[in-house]
Image (cartoon, rainbow, N blue to C red; front, top):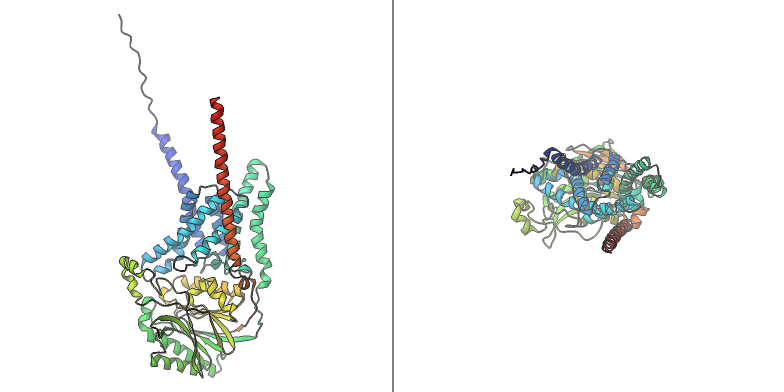
Length: 548
């Protein structure tokens, strides 16, 4: 018998190249949205001061919308976090100027979590009709949250603060920073929606009029609203005018070390005030009605130090008008306050304002015991400042001056309640010497410009080392100083007593937008459940049919 050999098929050799190419394509599909989200965050940062590229915020949000549209909430969470890091890491780099990268990186990482949550929400509502509306409201809800928590919030980087030079600025007078920010984000998301609908028309030849109308209105309504709000912006002198002087005495050196020469800082501000007084006497400068010194212009308590008190009295006597002094004062109870002191040439100190929104990790250390385990830098703040309890409005030579000290300018309520308590102009005394020549100074100056329009008040920004400025009620900068140069700004400004809709409405516009955001999220969750339920029902029906 002849044996028959049965051939055995050799296993097919798979070409590894297509598999590797497939994996590379999948990796690229993940990488491109991640890179786009991070870079669009950087684009948003570039739209902020000191640059005047406010319009870049629109394509930044359009790209973010493209990244998030149709994604799962988990993907939105990750992409939103990358967008937040791309925006906040460069924006907040000034927080590490003197203390190293640790606090800067930690702050940006924590604040980006709020943006991540917004990204998750935007992805969830991206399938709803009117997607740009829900998405923009969600962004403002995220800003509202991070303006309040943790540690009383950190609203730095609100979209409104990047729009001091933009066409949307008049909306600040209509509904404050929430409405201004909402309009910018809505327009950005609307741009993406308009592009997406145009692509759909080219691909299918079908125009969905409702969707196209939503896209168009998302772009046009914010622009038309800004135009319609322009009459709310006015420089009219309703209560006459006042000539104000903002003093920038300069500091011996920048950085945290400026505190080591507290007497020199006081001397510098006294000297600059006396120099201005000499110019007034010689007829070279107009006599001011009131004088504004910066925050920390006298870190030596004038109530307990006779030398400091005498220096201030000499300066007030020389200029001959009321002066607001920024001091560090220890109360009778031993508590430390960042205080503005109203010094009258005839009566001496007559009124005080204690800063209410104090800066965490700068003026006080939250969770000191826990934080000290990880960093010895907490010892640089040896005693925590205490909070004031009432709005600051000084009556200076008949002019009511509202006070929002430095960090407080970022908080809506801290500026608004000075106006509701009668302020005719606003002063934002600041000390930026700690942050050297960083962008922080210009970011803060932009906030004050937005506040001027929001409440239709002239705003003075006296700063120890610059940049000091006088801002008109329409947000234009009338005059400003240079960095680290002793100087005085003497300007006539209008006094105003009327209140804008933003001042009168207070937190109402923000509250409405938060409710809109919650409504959109609720609708998205309900729609997702309905789709899952319908899918389950179809699956069960198909299984039953197959078994028959």
